[in-house]
Image (cartoon, rainbow over the protein chains, first blue to last red):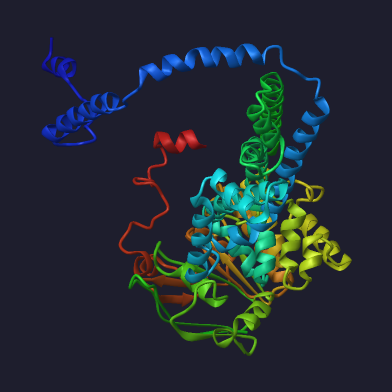
Length: 269
Length: 266
């Protein structure tokens, strides 16, 4: 065998590790494992209460069957209210997200405008829907208005954040070409920016509609209208068979929303 | 027509892209600007329509000082300056027709632009130009489904529908294969001559510059180092512009006619 082939068979290469120092690498692994063990140990599961809960759970589940669809009128009304809340919130959110999203795109507006718009988005995103819903219920009372406002807040921040990021990643050449024709800023938005972000804007909005349908059932539980309010009422009245009927209806609704959202976004590509 | 006086551009990074560049174009002619990458060719033509703001100096087009205009006046002035780009810069998701008509954006109201309701004269001009650049019947094709050469033809139509008093062309052929590049240059130069539009073309390809221009400007390190007729581009001049290189177009040992490579290519 020649020297050349011997060298070739013994050649070795391994990917350089992410953390260069061997000591640091092993220390981090050991610390990570220790933390995992400690956190599992500190969970303090009270097994007695878990055992007490089991018969209660089986009681609830037996009383749930068979699901009671006899009050279907109430059920449908709740579902329709939830859907209306979701649609209204998505549409208002889509409209409000356009100015906010444009102002939050660093490559379109001066720095101060950008910072203000970004802060508004962060602020709107800070609190979970349930907390926002509780606040609106306190202000406007029980009912769908509080629910719609909650979903609008969530939709505006979500859609505007994503379109702002899309605008920041768009091709500047297309915008430059439109500017070079002497187009004003609004016309530049219309021809240079809008066509580039439209598919994502619609895609994100459809995704948000899907999310709003799911969340509209949640915010109802704190009294902000919709099917969630109906569900919450059945639990407090121990109408578990009706609860199950509502839960099944919500599952069906979310499935339909999910399929529609996937289908529509596929079409947009 | 066009007078560029002592134009200087220093970028925020401290790079001096242009140093005291003066050019004057007094007749409708095609002026090729050649020079190595980073010589300031692109900056020069972008400083003329102020897509890049010059640091000092002035640009005068048909008696109007472009460098002194307010942003509103500048938009008005840009309507008369057509621009063609290396990467075509078409709006990818719009149709060919929308791209061509976008050259008239400076003249129509926002609402008409939104509804794509352009005056019949503009639409007629767009159809005429599409036919002229060889894209008749393609008006409803989306720009992103065209080939490179077709896109650049749309780019030419978009610039020419402005009825420009000046054409700025930035590396029109750099993304095209040699044949398509020559075809695009030919259309561009023909249309510029027909409309008597003075044209500034940045171009990498010295051969194309020689074939299609009336005048060649050579730039190096942000300065003009040559300004003359295409046939004055000797090896010495090319060395001045690009630096030392063997400029003979023959392959090394190309005088040997019996070389196998030469035979194979015949």
